Image (cartoon, rainbow, N blue to C red; front, side):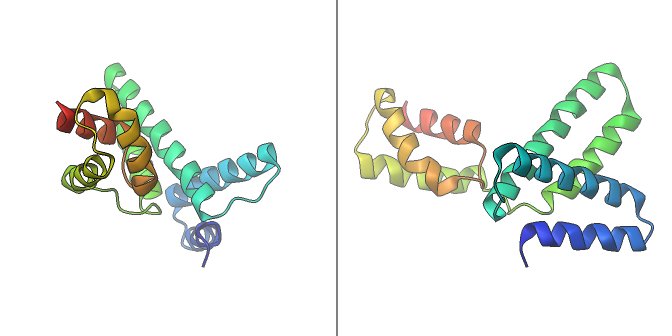
Length: 147
């Protein structure tokens, strides 16, 4: 079952089960997916849907930071729950150790020995970790290894 179909099915189940929070979050996510499809005049595949889901999680994480600064604990809890729900549809993220192993292999393959060649390492590494690791984490790991 495609990810978009899974989201629709889960929203329907939430509607039937009177789970309003889950229903509302899935409705927002499906609306964002639909908007992306309309804007780009295309039909998103699973990878495209995952990109939209990642953007939605990132938006909520930014909101969490803002709400924490404002002392709005209730909103922090709501946004945290929404982010966790959306993340449940994404593949498991890689740990720092897993990224480090791949980075060591990429450094060995490219033969880079200093920070000047970070671009070569990143261009080889990013396709391997796309969607499974944060770009900032990957960059940080590569920089530390090339010091």
